[in-house]
Length: 307
Image (cartoon, rainbow, N blue to C red; front, side, top):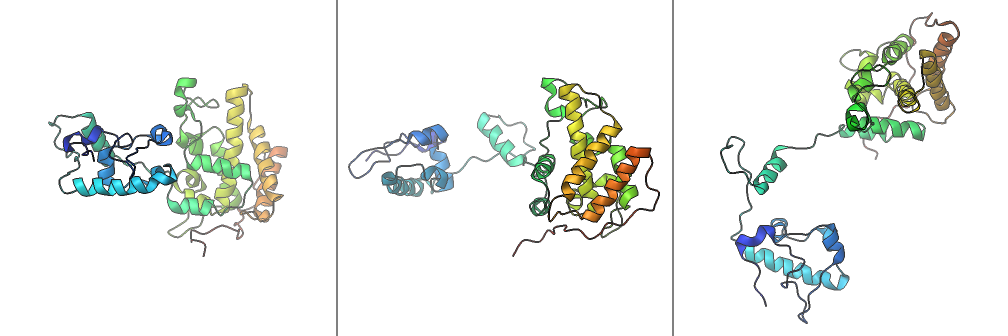
């Protein structure tokens, strides 16, 4: 049979067109699906020690054993003498940087930052809220809202409601109606009780996403945040003027939809308490004639894995 490529040529040669992969009748095979999904190089095969399963499954069934056996022969032939390229240390900036070295350096030095810890997603998946609200919360937790800084090339990076730089921090804590929203929840339910001391509600959405999904204050703030985002989109895309009265009405409508659902993560008594306070403000611009009401025990999910 034909010898495999020289060792020094490994990094750039694909394996799918190689005559090394032949069956007992000396026939070779090329998979169009593999060529479309990306070419596996010889150096990749030797480093992985086998063909990745997601690529192997795209081979014709009659050729899978041929490729498996040939790949083992290639790996056994080269492993004794092959040394994979190493990324240079950070301190050695005087080296000659090639594309391959730079890619290796970036691969080892940079790691994608997790959007949220696993516990946050574990609790999120156990929430009982309307589908549209869950979808909004998920997009915020993933930092996927089309905020200004993500759409700067499409029309500016400023908030359409207050004219300030619009990023996710601005949306979660500093937008036009945020101060009223946080103050309302604080006066309705008080501080958020947790181990290590009480917490101001205005820190939940941005700094404590896990606690925001497990507390009454946090859940009703998510409802308020969605109402605020909807008004923001009306201002940006429909050029409408909005007021605090519009925000309160939209927030109340969202809370009412929660109260009509079954098995909500937020208790109906807490929802009714906040709705009554907001409706009182809408009628007379006054509310909170009583001390804050401690939230009742809602169906807040835990971070424990299901059995």
